[in-house]
Amino acid sequence: MATVAVLGAGLVGNWIIKTLSSDGYEVIAIDANKDALSKLNKFSKTIHSIVDEELINSLEVDVYVNALPGRVGHKIRENLLINGNKVADLAFTPEDPEEMNQIAIDNGSILIYDVGVAPGLSNLLLHEANRRHGRLSLGRVRVGGNPSSKDNGWSYMAPFSPVDVIEEYTRPARIIRNGKINTLPALSEKTKFEVEGRGEMEAFLTDGLRSVLHTIDADELVEATVRWPGHIDMFLEKKDELTEEELVKAWSWNPTKPEFTWMEVYAEGDGRTSWILDDDGNESGSSMARTTGAITCAVVKFLLNEEKMKGVHPPEHLGELLLNLCLEEYGKHEIKIYEKSN
Image 1: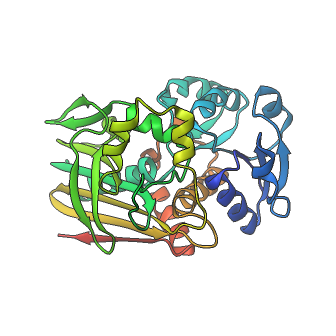
Image 2: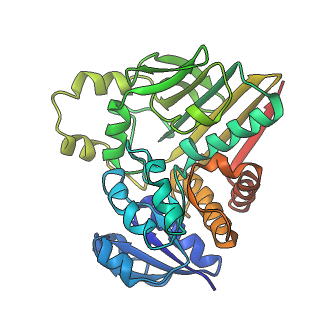
């Protein structure tokens, strides 16, 4: 059976490790945090270590999953690619992974990046929208992982690295307007809207389009993060008062608190389609771990069977094949995703 090394055993990495193990794969879990590895011994081999070139060179695996926080995850990419590896990359970084495309080609490696809900699954759905509807007059992604109910504080806990959330809130947002790429301040264009079964939420621009700015044919493309009303106003009010460490603590994950992940991908061209993803966390993991982990497992299985493709690619380069693998994984884990056509 194939061997998969998962770099990072946080909320998402933990779910991926357990799921791949239950699917029959040999899994190696690697993390610098001993506590993160403590409950994984019965699912995988564990290595308590920082991830560096020496460690990568010491391993023989079939696929790597880069589930490290963005700041760390980018640093290890080149080490992975120069050794002819197959990589499913979840690290959300400001750096463009495609800058390493030639390194991957020269060394016979393949890396699929932005493996997640959005970017990730959203890319695949926008690609499918192009296939169905031609050039889009509008493509819109709205997505967020949130507590199931609003509270009197932040109404938020970070379902992945809180540091990555802070970067998401501060990185300028690139969108497409009138067929051209525009850059707007992060958190701009706030709008309130109703989420069926959840209540009134608030969306604001973030820089989540990334590769689809260049791969999706559209007059207008936007991506917005969804939170409970008041959350982002509180961030704007307090961001200069609180340190990064204080924000990380304030947004720390509470596994006993009900939460959900919701995404809408709306596409309009020659026809219209909306896809809705709506998942509640359960005993197997948080909703973000489940929804991100499922597409990661699909990418791992794609890579294990792919022998010809080399280079660095976003999910949409794999098109309908990967989308179908993702939907199979989502169905297997009872993650609800459905579409509405108009």
